Image 1 (cartoon, rainbow, N blue to C red):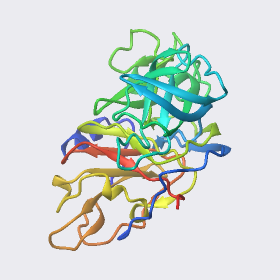
Image 2 (cartoon, rainbow, N blue to C red; image 1 turned 135 degrees about the vertical axis):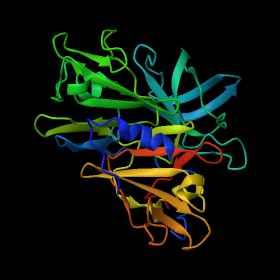
Image 3 (cartoon, rainbow, N blue to C red; image 1 turned 180 degrees about the vertical axis):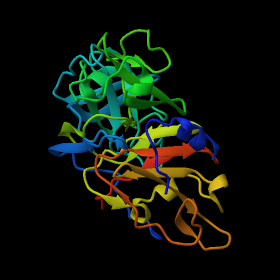
Image 4 (cartoon, helix red, strand yellow; image 1 turned 90 degrees about the horizontal axis):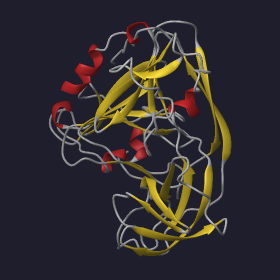
Length: 334
């Protein structure tokens, strides 16, 4: 078990070093909305992985045509709203042709719009007939408040403040709320520009490292994103969103089919789960002494498949082996 103390950035360097059956997943999922509210505790002196399980979905429908980068959408409402004035993402939530291109579960920020035609940097092109949703992306301000309404500990320097980490190309980038100027600033550039409008990338979450103050809570409300979740990851550290509002276990999640396993933690990808401020690392052991299955770091024998992925808790994923990739099937799909 790895205990992370938020005022000790050495753990970032440390991280940089270092079921049996899968549930069948549906390619076509109902487009019903699940609206709810989640409250996450942010205890002082501990680290919390925050998943963005609730979003604002502004449109849904099917892909009508794909012409190069342009994707023509048949949507509800009949005319797409403006999805460029504030950041939005396109997510493909079904696949009409399982044998064709597979963008199922992928999300990407929308970068261009001309009426019903949008462009988004999806890792794979969607198929005609694939279902989609468009949802508004979160920012530091929309999650935590432009004026730090969540009440994280502010300070004139990052060393005395709570830190918020986002993912960028396999690197954890730190932010803090700087007192005096009352703005969100980069840990690496405390005298720089206000970072309140920093966008949390599609498929990502946050890691909040509390150093002091009193216990706080974070209330998130909106609609649950449907379909499997495929995250864009890079070699290194990735805060991966968990968009699902029901718990599942490592063994039932089928994550092992979408990451790289190994005979030991040095040659496998690592999934860190957080509970009560403690991060514990797991890897999928696929051979060698001690059998196969999910294992906690430091214990190559005991099965850890029952470890829970909790609602509204992001995962910290160390991509260090094989081809970069991460997917989390919808836990309640048939």
